Length: 236
Image 1: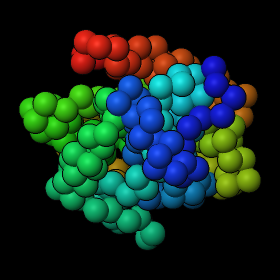
Image 2: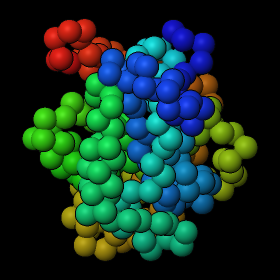
Image 3: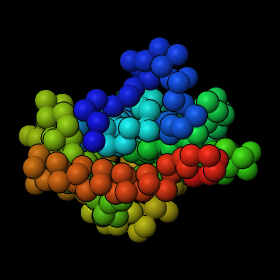
């Protein structure tokens, strides 16, 4: 494990040029959207960035890009402060970003927001069709705890405890996402939860959040072995 991840934010271009042909660029992809009355708008970006940074610490052939802090969050539009660029713009942004990363052997998008999954998959398909080595990874989760519930609140308590307001945490909609998806698609999150929460954050705990982050990071690092460039073969 490397002591310090290689971040584009800290490097001049000659340093990148020396190794880019054998490196994988990790791009955290998040959102700026409501996360209930107790969490900040940057939860998805915070988690994606933390996981991508752990990957860059664990694999010296990973270069960490600055995060993409906006995505497709239209379902949260009923809650003030949510900023969404929509599916088409998200897909285009990530497609063009991937095209611009040709100096690297490959690119992986580490997503922290479920609403980005479809535009991300379409962007990856386009980039792969063009012959680029592109990958997409996102953490797993309980379908009945999919937004601002126990999992995300615990993770934020581990990452940014000062940004969490435990006293404002209240249970939200507890049905699995698949059951509420039709209503959510018709009327947005406001149609299924007044608080913006899907799950129950009231028992969230920083120690549990650390275990969740550790598990996600371990899975991401394991998955990364399939993305590592193979010297001289030109294949992943």
